[in-house]
Image (cartoon, rainbow, N blue to C red; front, top):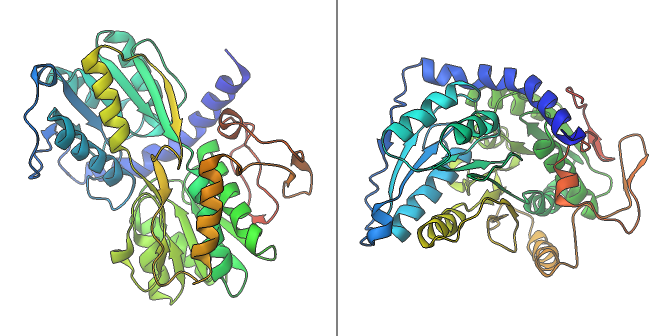
Length: 386
């Protein structure tokens, strides 16, 4: 077992205890988590004979309409059904860890032969179920494990994070920007670093203050963390959490905000400027097409802005006027490959060189547990170390 896998497992084991605490209460409140067809009202094409043989199940960490991560995946599920006419089922509000195996098994018992599990903490349970059911195709989002019948998938979200940092850096008047962060894992840490690099590319005097929530979605905790950052003097906040509570908190304090997962301008129109967003639908369609035509092979997918799996939502009028041109300029360079977010020289909080001049970190390096440091300009600590 490689050092990367060993350390990731140790890191996840600590973060996992927080995840269970953050998500379990949703199920305990009696929210319906039974397997259900989506039955969207949008017209679906008539499925061909191969589509009739495919039934796709999704496991979600949050409620279907959370305004964030789960809703983005649910939109992808709807897109899949509309494009290919396949039957879809889902379980929502499923805690990470062993309980997710129960949800997966119920979907399989209901006839699903393709399963998408859409949160980091579902990784090990998904792997275990893939071993138990070798004839079923499994897809796990945001992890790194795969098998002959199991793919993993994610995106280079640090690209739109960087672009959103440009917007924040141009907007702040006090040079204090707040960042709500879920868990101390490479996915989140790399996002904080990318955002801060974007901020400092246009405003080297600005700092980014990090506050950990230890939950993916908990509106009350997210609001408390947002208020704490605003009380600390931040006039712009952003988030790696899934509810719209931080946006609303910013609006209530006449501050400004950048969301995550979806374009949520309607939640706080006076505060919201933009958001790094996901577009999962085309990936889901491509995978089911490959299964249907017999060309599917397990893979580790991590597309970016160029591939369309992630992007920056259109800027609202609240965003600084000069940010649009700058964002479009850098975005074009990301797409044509002439700019990579983690290109040196990059320094950590102590001033040590972490990425040498002329070197660019690969996706695997960015998402490995070696990403256990903050760039210069971040104020905060990584509370779980490998």
